[in-house]
Image (spheres, rainbow, N blue to C red):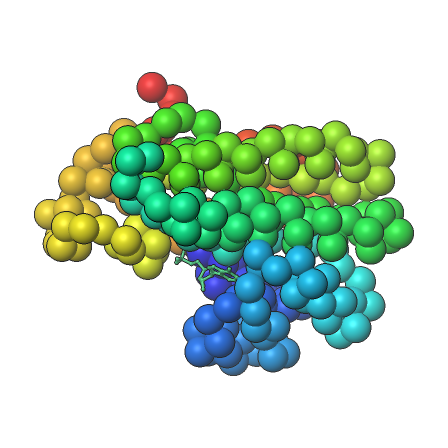
Length: 232
Ligand SMILES: NC(=O)c1ccc[n+]([C@@H]2O[C@H](COP(=O)([O-])OP(=O)(O)OC[C@H]3O[C@@H](n4cnc5c(N)ncnc54)[C@H](O)[C@@H]3O)[C@@H](O)[C@H]2O)c1
């Protein structure tokens, strides 16, 4: 979804700095959408997050939008979640969002303008079986979003979260003990009121909207893009 979001911002005329730990993927996407070299590293490292923001400022002189899309999942209940798995999910999903956002709000405050869009999840608002660490991490992302939105409401910085349901990305198929068959994908789609998975662009368009002046009165919002999943 991060890659597709970057493409949507480019199509809308924006400059983009891609940040990811997967160098091959990041370079491919940067070349495809014709932006400068990606910044490669781990968002759970706060020094790296500071460098990533500095790179954007060096390249373009300002930072208007930060999209926190990096995330990982572990599919296990508490009994089957190791210390390492718990910490990995928290380090990337929670610390990564916090470190990137903290690095970005300084320059955004100086500019008097900025927008941050965090990737929350339906699992940050409602519970799900077999994904304890992930649910906890996304609940924390929602609360980082609300708390920081209030801290910076007078600084010209709007901070919102997009909360997708089941989206057809590599993450949806990852970390599963059972084989990823068309039947499994259909069974996931059947849990959604609309009866299908989202395509990444259906989420990316909402991120673009939240970054734009069309969303000028929105801050601290959890925007569900879930085809009715949490409406029940
Ligand atoms: N796919 C879904 O159904 C779904 C639903 C709700 C929320 N989300 C959330 O949306 C966001 C994007 O998910 P996706 O489905 O596109 O996932 P994905 O696995 O396809 O992509 C995640 C990207 O994050 C990068 N990444 C992971 N850990 C990193 C780290 N430590 N430092 C830097 N980069 C790192 C990966 O290299 C990858 O490019 C995530 O936060 C995810 O939790 C996904």
